[in-house]
Length: 144
Image (cartoon, rainbow, N blue to C red):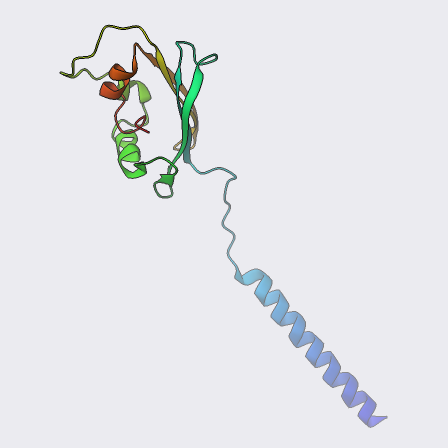
């Protein structure tokens, strides 16, 4: 009987140690709430046509700027740097004038950006008169 009690006491001590270890493991990991989407991730498109809803998309890429530049954009570091310097204002990126001479031909090219920038929803579209003007004014963000 004495061995049975010692065995029962040893079993209880081992069970308590296991439970204490499991409880300690469960509370040791700090909670880090993470959202479903990155704070700065965009789908960028370039298409033919003057209406974003009906333009024929020719190219599309994903640009992720946070936590680090990435995605399948060919120059994510440059594109993210341009967007950061513009405070995420796409309109200020495409309105710059330059000295490049482009033909006065109406073959509209529409660019779009949809996603999140610094945690806020973004939906942007701009139509250029032709591909030459787009290449001149769009910068790294829409150069893909």
